Image (cartoon, rainbow over all chains, first blue to last red; front, side, top):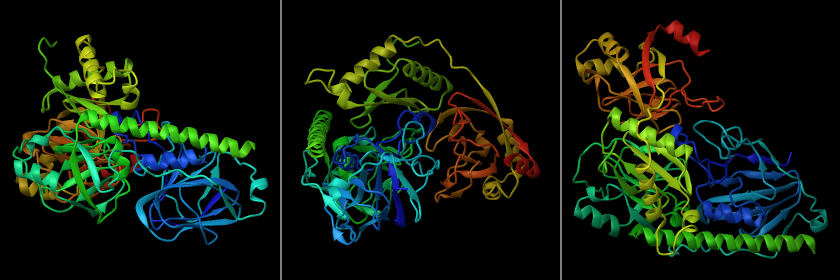
Amino acid sequence: MSLRIIKTGVLDSIQDAGRFGWQFQGVNPTGVMDRFSASIANMLAGNNPDAATIELHFPASVFLFERPALIALGGADFAASVNGEPVPSLHPIIVNKDSLLLFSAPLHGARTYLAIKGGIDSDEWLGSQSTHLQAMIGGYHGRRLHKNDQLFFKINIDYSSILQNKEFVVLPWKVDQARENGSENSNELFVLPGREWDWLDEKSKADFLSASFTISQQSDRMGYRLNDIPLHVVNSEDLVSSAVSFGTVQLLPNGQLIILMADHQTTGGYPKIAHIISAHQSKAAQLKAGDKIHFRMTDQQTAERLLLKQQLHLLQLQNACTFRLDEFFNK
Amino acid sequence: MPQQKIYEIFPLGDAALTIDFGNSISEKINDTVLNLFYAMRQKPLPGMIEAIPAYSSLSIFYNPFIVKGKIPVNETAFGFMKKETEKFIAGFSWNETPPIRIMKIPVCYDEEFATDLERMAGIKKMDKAEIIRLHYENQYRVYMIGFLPGFPYMGILDEKISLPRKSQPQQVAPGSVGIAGRQTGIYPFNCPGGWNIIGRTPMKLFDPLRQEQSLLHAGDTVEFYPIEKNEFLNLIK
């Protein structure tokens, strides 16, 4: 026993960086929605950035630590506390056994990531621990976490000399959450034109780039439906299905848009209007129903430059985190 | 095959590209797509993660971070991958045909499972038995597996029984056999679906623990045969 769920959250599941290589069989990659934040939580916990974390939505699960663990939280701020004492995100925290971790308010963002040093021991399928909710496999028995589930850590580490009977210890360094993606405005998403961008009439193109869109209640890990002004196409040709991807913005027959997210289907037959650039997909993952967004057109060069910048930033953070943890444990 | 370029390459965001052979449903084009897919699986492009074959297109997903590390600063990863793809296609032998498998799939057309058959018979002004016969007497090609794990897109359905998908998706049971336009498909899982359901197969379209998770592959030939409800119940156990 290591970690026990005391109260069921609304949709909490084990996710890593995704399951790739099987989309030809219709197996969608799943994985974390906000890859950037999950990577940071993992790095703070001394893990590989792509390792499995627990992705939490609000209201989130309540966890009981049955063994001590070094954890880190990244992504949304859900006002985390250990045994009633607030604990910060983006710091490594060593939690003693018999401690309760809970989340009391959705202060900012949509999803938070709990990483545990050494990793979570859960079902691997086709090379990934991500929970595939549809195929009901991977992660914790292929399903979301429920009350009384017990998770095991891959390794158990003795933290007694650091804890000295304290309930938890926050280690004295943190990382900055800045996403280094060329636009820190959390509601602005850079896009590239999709194959059917030119199907839109001129007014719809202008609307797409100037209007603000609202994320509707019909939004989940599969995709976000956007409400507001319908867009119109000049071409009514039927499209045969072809591959879509995380961040693809499709136009539904009723003129509304849908942004495909982590659990998106592998192929689709609706016009592909645009694609959210990779460097902004993580930011999009922190949006929730009611949030407003703006699209801004960019080009391939810029999209790639921003992705590179973000990846290099993550590599630097990873080096810094590894260095601080090594130094702390070897002093 | 091609002397002149019979395809277009366009970006699918900043981490994938699609090779498009034209917006159509054709066995010949689909053969080309599948040939290319199998060839690329054997000899992946640099930085490639995976490829997804569809009706008339092949999409290639790549890691732009890795690709950028291999190319001059002013070149885009997309530009590089596009060139590599064109080179691959130019040097690729088009003669191979993927092995053809004939897959026989039992379907129970009992009214308990055929939730849209009655409505369909009304719209089409046809006997239910006639719709069923036209469905199973035809042979179908699996053009692609997509949408959900193991979901086969099959065609081409007899014009007489083609029907657009429903405007409101409804919850469908696993194994449900549906019709949408001139396509027929089978839902592997319980999910909301818009295809018109005319029967159910006891076979598991997708089993995560099977060696070959997906029962059907793109390129397969499918033959349906009707079974009675008691047979269905025996087979589903």
